[in-house]
Length: 202
Image (tube, rainbow, N blue to C red; front, side, top):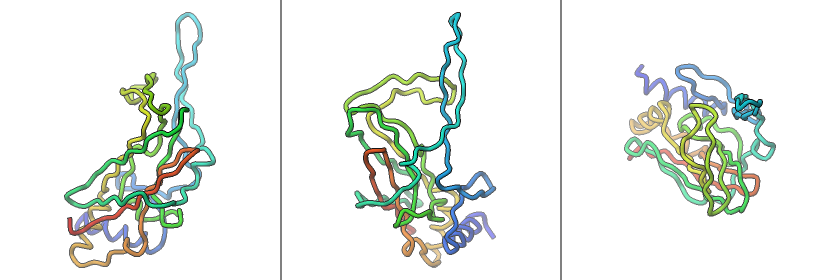
């Protein structure tokens, strides 16, 4: 069995079993919905011109632990010829707004098909509307660009997603047509919903 076929078979079995997994290299691990955490860093000024960088593991806020779908703004289509796309959401508030994104089912429930698409980044912070703010980098991995007043969320087909499209293209059943996938991008004040489709004909 080829790698693509194996990935497609795995995705189909997970969709049927309604299990949710995160792909981590060649290993799969259950995704603990509602218990995600994100790494943040703070700089402590210790005197004598020296700073200490402390890494924290902060819990995701309560409002970002559920991703109910709302009115669909638009449909995003990914295919073998269009493997990635970015969605832009602007900040309508005059305050800093943290945001989180997730792929879910129609009722906001975990959807195994989420492993077909990678969301990157899955969280961040937007500067106040109409503003741009300097980003202080505390780690080498921190983004270099300034904070913007919008979120740019990238979607990209994973190996499992590409395998699934090959499966459907060769005559296999399109399970996603029965269990659709949605991208929800949330701030504490607002929520944006997009339907995500995988097109085997593209």
